[in-house]
Image (tube, rainbow, N blue to C red; front, side, top):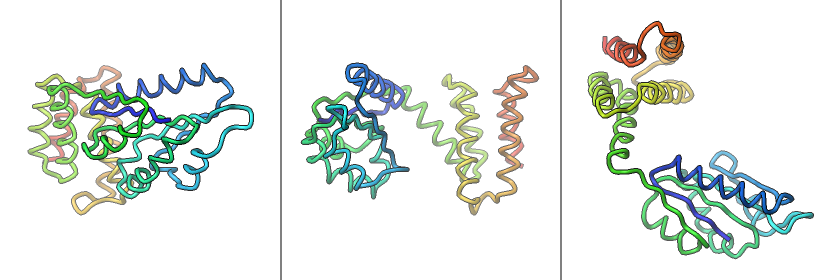
Length: 220
C-alpha cells in the first residue's frame, strides 16, 4: 500500500507525511518503521521491506524520502512500484517537485496522493534564493548582490539568504573546491559567515546589512 506526498511546498509535504507515519505508529505501536533515502537506498533491502513482516507486528511502515532526486535510484525505484503497491506493508513516498510523468506513474499505484504546492509568489521567491546560491557558486558577485537585494525587497528573511549562501559554500567545500573557488577561500568564507551570524545574534549589527557587506566584499 502506497501513500504519496509531493509538491513544491516541501515543508508542508514532509510535515503531513511524518504526521501520517506517527498516526500509523500510534495505531500499531508494535509496527516497525524504516526510513530509506538516496544515501542508504539498497534494492535488496527495499525488496526485504516489500516482502517481509515483523515477527510481532502485522506490518512494516517504510518511509521513502525523495528517492527520485537521484536519477539512477529513481529508475530502480520506479521499476519496483508494482511490487511496492502489492506489498502488505505500508509505504509512505515523499517527493518534492517532480516531473509529470513520474508523479503520474506513482499516483497510479498509490492508495492516496496528496500534493502541496507553494503559491506562485512564494515559489518565485524560492527560485530567486536558489538562483542567488548558484550565482555565488559561479562567483558572479554582481548577480549575487542584485538577487540578494531583490529577495530582501520581496520579504525573504536575511537568515534564509545567509543560510542558502552558507549551504552553497559548504557544498563546494565538500566537493573539494571548484574552478571558481579554491578550498582556502571557501574555508575562510565559511568561518566569516559563521562569525557574521553569531555577531548579528548578539546584536552587534543587523544581519541584513552584514550579509550585504559580505557580498560586496567578495566582489573585490
